[in-house]
Length: 323
Image (tube, rainbow, N blue to C red; front, side):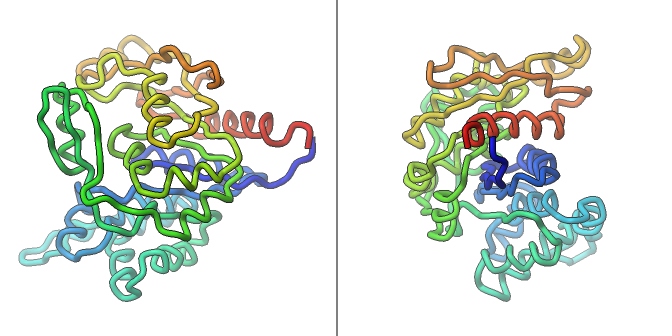
């Protein structure tokens, strides 16, 4: 085996992707970039998008903070929320969201704004927005009803409606620089994250499947720990693989999945929210299963170091053995 630095692209959003990046960045043999969903309609990001006409900054900010040189101090400063004052439109937003939005407004270029934030934080990797075009996630449910917006799509499936299909309105295209970056990754890691609003929207962007077709390395899915509400009852890792493969038109090579559950009390608490441990299902024969104990505490969150070491084991086996 000949060790060399590998460049990996981590796809997702929400809280799962920053956690993965935080674990991977400590490996000196890995250069981890983030490819981030850009269709957030909730919270501070949604308000800034609607009021200032900027792209939603929240997921980009969280990934940049995860890759920062001094993550703890950067998070303390940039995730602090401004006080909500009477007649103040921007009160209640995090300092980081406002900073990134201001940088985008002044530069007129979101990629330049992200690079400026990256330089300010001393990030080890880059953060790529999958698209710089404004769009919303839309869903059609099994009962024929439809909805639009990340928050609304999540609420619909959580309330018990099965997501039949999702799409972007209007259609969005990948930025050429991002397409080139994806094609040059040694491997791609997907997840963990909210399946319909953090993961799948990335693969609905025109040009993403073509960029992934040019990427020669493996595609690894870090499966979620739990299903995400009544609308995902019975959903499995195999179902996630099937939907991703249909969108990207190439195989998912590896599923990395938790195999040990926490206490019955913890599981009962999540069951009250109609969230249950994700089953593996029947994976296609080409998809390797890698299992491990990734859920360590009482909160449903992947252990950073265990996940990072598992990813490195998979990458070294597939990309370095025989080099």
